[in-house]
Length: 232
Image 1 (cartoon, rainbow, N blue to C red):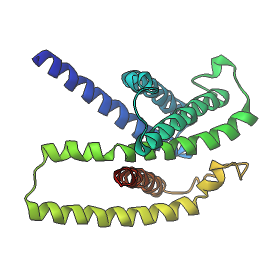
Image 2: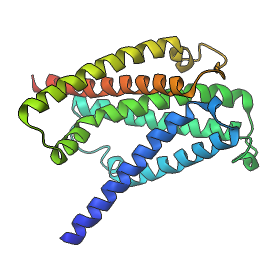
Image 3: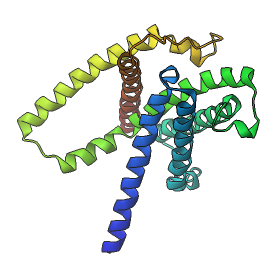
Image 4: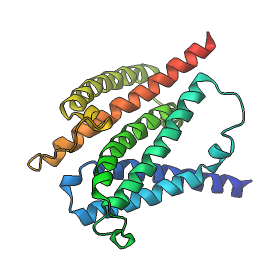
């Protein structure tokens, strides 16, 4: 019994490490202009490996895809997961087409198609990954609450404090999303992704972190809304 608990605990730690690593690395990859091309491709290769490990660890989800009842909440999460997988696979395919260092030996160069596909796929992957995180945020919250117990009054103050901070971050994320014209990239309304090479890295990552948290918050509250609708 203890062996089973230990194994389960180890797998849980591996899952958290893989997911956190994949999220952080993809956030870094959004700043292509902030790294040398070789380093960018190496980070990308690491994300691809983590992506396949993540799917391997969650193979039961695919196994149960056609089993059980589909509630509104489950349907939303399933659509998000499938779209995320498709977007990531497109990101991988387009990265191989554009590779000048790590995967250059594959000789899959198609810069025209690869550039457009990569621009669209990376933005969709980034947003869907964040939305996916939001769908699972309640489970993360419960896990944190099990380990950290606060007095009732302090718990209420903390909850409203973080809600206020989240609201401010989401409003800034909406501003950053619009100012960076990510919508144009998502739907290929622009031919090129313009990079500001003079921009401080802190500002770039602050903007994209805020955008990511905006998408995660959307996933979190969308799931809550779906659950409430099902209870009516």
